[in-house]
Amino acid sequence: MSGPKVTVFDNLLPPPEHAAVWAFLNQGGWTYGGFSAQGPEADRYFYKHFAGYRNDGREARDLAAIETELLATAPIVGEMWKALRKGPLQGQALSRCYANAMSGGVEGGLHLDSNIESHLTAIYYPHPAWEPDFAGETLLFNASGDEIVAAIYPKPNRLAIFSGTIPHVARPMSRRRSDLRITLMFKTMPADAGPAG
Image 1 (spheres, one colour):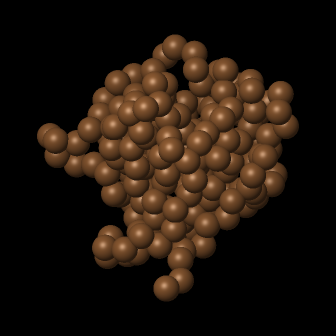
Image 2 (spheres, helix red, strand yellow):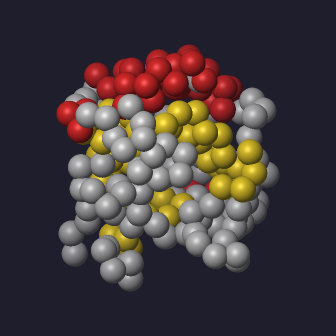
Image 3 (cartoon, rainbow, N blue to C red):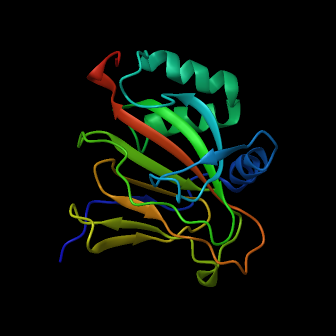
């Protein structure tokens, strides 16, 4: 069995920047009600929307304006994006940036982020420390959703990039951990795609 292409960058940020992003994400401003599964039984969690599409890719948005929005709403994350755009996500334009926060036992739902292969999902794991017993892995599935084909351990200061067409899910964090599982998401599309809408 071969897995999907997942590119992983460990120790993405220098320690002071990693600590600053973690501190920023731990500030107030969270909204409750995010979900990745459909239906009334879906678990809800906290999220912060920083920039880009809010509902779906049919919104009329200019990709350059999304980057400007991010720099205005979350400057530290905007600077991080500018570095990603020159490095691991070169050739991509930002379509959406947000953070999720799940408490122990809260489950995500299997979902796709896009139906276009060239649209990428980049997940940054900002925690200063993590242990295997905390769980909270991101699992990637085959197209039919009946087989796990990759698992991404939420290693501190790790960035994982994969196609948004890959079904994936955030598995619950152990209830033994008392704080939140926080992830920072960068959704992208090819920079030459021009204005979306």
